[in-house]
Image (cartoon, rainbow, N blue to C red; front, side):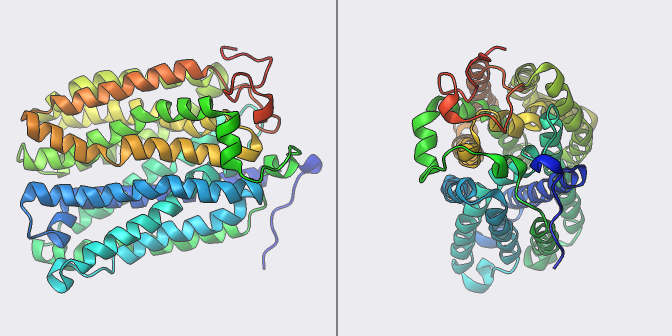
Length: 455
């Protein structure tokens, strides 16, 4: 067996360990978001016909988006379960399990029988796999982020966290490219076996992610932490830092709602309402993801220099104006260049500025012995509220109003909530993850006493 990388003197991670930890975090994020993009796209374009062909198009789409949403129900449970053990016994052991639940679930979905073969059995099994997979995804974000952040050099957490987040646009590029290829198949082949290919390809990604994590040591911050171990990290988190939890959930609402409006919902809207080819949206997100590969590390580095809050608020403003007010009128024009441009602005820049620094920002709100749990609760709580139900809500509201504007208003509301929360959370980029402890924070914000919320 290959030995784990060594520690530099003083139990600080050496440069090689930091790089490997960051790459391990990237692979986990890639696998998590590959599942997300693959399933979101399939739920809009393929699964209604494969698993719900007997229903009307609108009902089938709602049922399909329902299977998309059920995984969000168990994500908070996964965050609690894996956060508990991640804060008690370490980050590495639980991350060996989460990578299997995510990748294995996606792979098995590619083997499910369609409605034509087994009636409703395939849909039932699909829901069960989504529920189990949601548990794994719930535990992945917190631990995956901390692989990079708790091994990062001082003053470079924003940059390290941004490389973890790079797994998202990389996964979107891969999933969109694969879907673009399989959609070239004739409809009968696409709906029988072609749609399975993107799901089955998660197998090799799973093997790579497990191999990398197997040979990493525990994070430096966890090993050097000398605060008392909590018997129940969740209860300690809610008792000591409830305000930080609520502010974190609210801060992420814009990101969670924006993507599900401009991508998952918009894909179905342009095809069913406008009668356009879904490739118009999908191509735009491929281009935007390529741009985001450059935006994320730049935003992370800038946040290390000027702070998290100004970068995050800029992203919220872009999403409010570009996503809530301009997005649907622009794509309604049917002009490819205009559509791709608005997607780049809202997705690559708007959500990119927020997404690049979320893991660093949220980690800086919590102490080491509750940090895994805190990150998971914030991320998955916001996903449950602002992510999972958003496509179905948008379908219902736009069908009721006969227009796109309720979806835009819903996004503007999310932006207002996030702006208020990020302002109240204050600045965190000077916090030291190795020293921050919930018992010593001011007003339950996660900011050590003496720094102040606006330092």
